[in-house]
Length: 448
Image 1 (cartoon, rainbow, N blue to C red):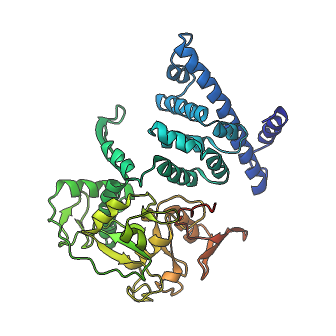
Image 2: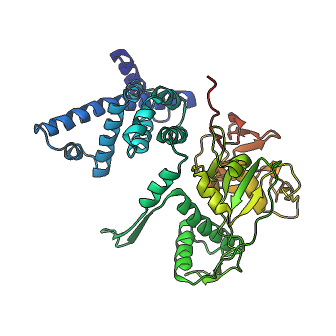
Image 3: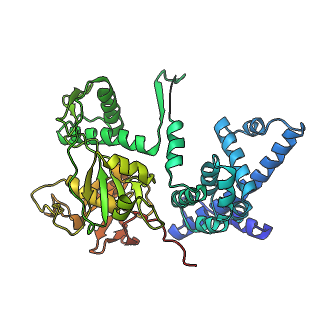
């Protein structure tokens, strides 16, 4: 980035005033800030690497100490060091950052993904760096993290099993007391599969209690904490399983779901008049997987094998879990499950939620990263005021923020038959028009 461009970006930032300018002008200001921030971060990384070498030569204090003295926390200082090392190992990312073409978050994702790679895997990944830099330029940080995860798995030369084993070995729990508030803080670090198992129980139980009319004004956070305490400190019944129904080859995609099949156990929640009742079919762990992957055990490029939240899982693990699981085929227009219930039911059914989970990884609004599991199912034709039916073609997941925008914020959301959406602002301007499904299928292999 040359001096002329830097001066132009600074001038753009200096020109902004409170209450002056339209949306286009403010977006230009934000873009200028992002580009300058990337440039500054790139120059700081060069300085960080120089400080590290000076420290090795005995001519400087440790780089983390120096960064802390500049006003950064210990965690921020360590992150800056990892970021600098990642850019030094992959200069293409440094150049893109210095040019303002990518954000610091892209480099942070690279640093996290490569921290524990073997030398061989790191060498293999180097060959993919030009393609990764190009991907980062056109993707959000969250999207790039997924792309990078696929590349790391391929560079490691395994199907993800060894990575899952490493993650399981790093599971941790710790406790400490906040010195200011006296609150006890419990930190739990889990691999993706264990996390899915834990939160499937918690979320299902919270939803079940809310559906039972337990509305005492508590926030979602308070409900969740009370539920966790109740589930851990109260005895529950021993789960049993039933044999899975058959899956035939003409059903190309399936959701592998694990159920507790016993009668629901109850546990009183502090501050609540309603016991925590575990629904009949929890915990349910849904894994999106192509039929041929499940049958033949080979995950090729372009095939799905991941949790509902989009975390890749090794096929061997899924096939083992499927021995004690229900296999629930997702056939969007089939008649094996009732996906349209009309006016007979207001809330989306569990089968509708499963079908939507196969389409959406997150909130349906473009760019929103709230996971599907944390979304509500929105009727695009309101059930109460417009007599809208609870049919799959009229349902989509929305996070709490976007749900409020549509209902109380004056935004208008229209879902078209091909699942494109049109989101219109209160001033009548179209904010977004385009596809809403965001379940990202890995790209197919490149044609030689």
